[in-house]
Amino acid sequence: MSLSFNPNLEQARRRSGLAHRVLVKLKTLGLSDNHDEALATLCTDIGDLWSSQLVFLEILNRFLEESDNWDSIGDDFADMLSNVEHISWHIDSLKKPLEILAQYSYSESKNTE
View: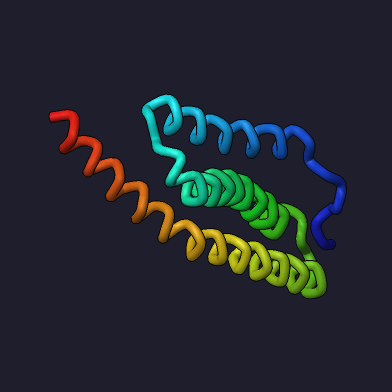
C-alpha cells in the first residue's frame, strides 16, 4: 500500500501559513531586503520540513498499524526512504540561510546594544 496522492489541502495551508509566519516575524523585526533570498529559502525549507515530518509519521503509523505482509512493508520502507531523502535535501538547503540569518541576527543585536 503506497501513499495516497490526494492532496492534503489543510496540511498545505498550514505549511504555507507557517512559512508566512516566519517571513512576517523577520520582516517585522526589520530584516533587510538584502536577505530576501536567504529568507525565501528559510521559509520554504521550514514549511517543507514541518510537513515532511508529518508525512513520515503517517508512513510509520501505517507500517506499525496496517502493514501485514512483506509487499506492503517494502512499500512502507520505500516511502520512508523517499521521505527521508526529501527531508535530507531540505536540511542541506536550510544550513546556509540559517548561518546567514544567525550572523545577521547577532550583528543586529550588537548594533542595538
